[in-house]
Image (tube, rainbow, N blue to C red; front, side, top):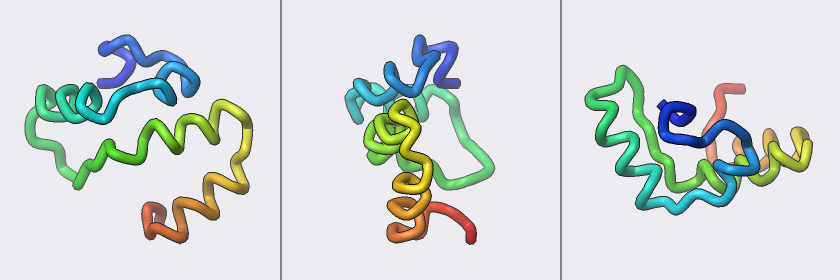
Length: 67
């Protein structure tokens, strides 16, 4: 879904506008899980910098991961 929209790296996703990501999700139609792209850019910035521990900690603090 994101690759076909031109987001091929974490760095490019990190620069994405929330409105653009929401549009991509809405075009995807009904998904079998809840999707909230409002945090994707922030998470992608951490991932692009290789800050995996920081990313996981941030996700857990917002209950975005199962762990």
